[in-house]
Image (cartoon, rainbow, N blue to C red):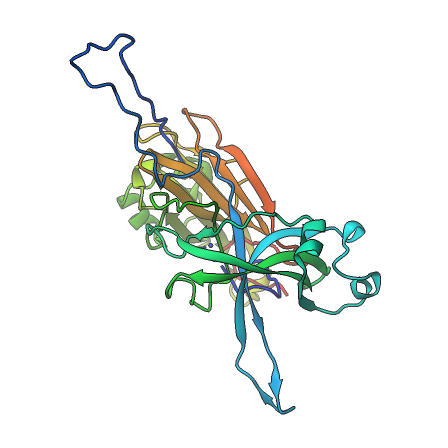
Amino acid sequence: MNHHYAAAALGLIGSGLALAGCWTTTTSKEPARTTLEASAPDLMGACPESPQLSILFKHAFFGHEGGEEEQEAVVRWYLQERIVPDEVDTIFTVEQRETYEHISRPISRELALANGASASEDPIWVYAAPDTPPCKATPGAHWGHRTGHGQLFTSLTREVTLDCGEGLNDPNVGWAFGFRQAEAPSRCLWSGAAEPIAQLAQARAQGFPKEIDDALNPSSCAAPGCDLRFILNTWASRPEMGVFEVTISHVFPVEEVDECDWQFVDHYGIFVRAGQDPSTPMILWEGAEGYEGMLYDMRGVRALITQEDGVVEVAAPPEQANTQPRPLQSFRWYIPHEEDHAIHSLAPYCGP
């Protein structure tokens, strides 16, 4: 995400990673013999009809050689299969679960399957860069991890071998998503974002939607008594779809008073528009946080993706005006510390 917020943290990872028209075809009930029959659209490589994402994360291992010199970290990528509840976990013993000890170890396929791993050997097609076909991750050994920043939990994974070039080598990228299937969804792309806009006047000049102005009321904050802080993320590889994530803070500074004692009011929201007509009103996507982009193919945008506090959610785009995106998937891939949560604010941060 590009806006300023305090992100949830996890020992396993680094920091992180709409709106569809309906494809229809019309054929004559009794085509003349001299005409070609209407053919079905070519959907090879398209997005899945009901997108269900797989989540991958990276884990750095550190070691010592000769008892003194620290080795360079060994980074591995894993496919997150599931979080195994303690009451059914047979990967780790009760004693191991009751000690505050981080453990990562390979496990047998039989043990992994018994704890809920998928039997699939299909590759995972991972989105390593925006507007680019996904790259291949090949599943390998099963692993169990006992990990967490607060409450420890058992994570069941598979190590993967990436064929992604430099796409996931950025040290700031700690997780990624993709589809687990035999054939590559080579024409299903993940959208990229335009540079965030931090000036309200600039945002309005570039088509700032009226609905955001009305809902967040930035005009109610005027200098000198109020400092308007603003950032807009526009997901502009498909600008006609109209997805905007915006954070606005009204900060009331007081001279000779510590900034941690200043008053402020925060506004945050993700706004979406059904279809591709820019005259269609935008609506606030209720309850959505942490927008990660959209997936689109030759039919238009197929899914919206959010990720907040360890939960990735996928939603189908609204099909008509004034309707909400339709939930398709909710997948928890880690459990954050109780104090770790996203703060959508541009006010001075004075937390832990």
